[in-house]
Image (cartoon, rainbow, N blue to C red; front, side):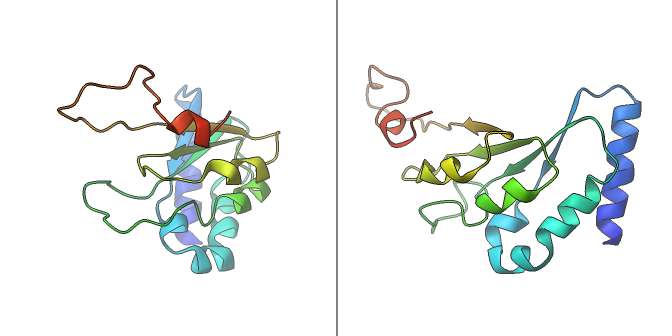
Length: 138
């Protein structure tokens, strides 16, 4: 928990310096969900202990060009509903990501989804979201 305590101090310093929102990037929880279930939320909540400003946590799958085998969805996203964070940010560079898990996050938490489109030599679809919007209704 020493690292979480250090992050907590850093967040306090950022808000004291005038930050409107502080986002924590957290790739570990998605990559190692079983270990994250043992102590990930405890560490995240410790990092946010006593923080009164707007906070967000970002989960990702890693760099799309490097990570070749990806799961179909987020393996640790629902657990964040029990965290102190106010906003959850995820990326969906994975072409077949199942967004139904978003329904399990309490409405009290804002959810932000960012889309990553790949460059192709073919003509882009009429809708910039292509078939993705049908799989991830908001």
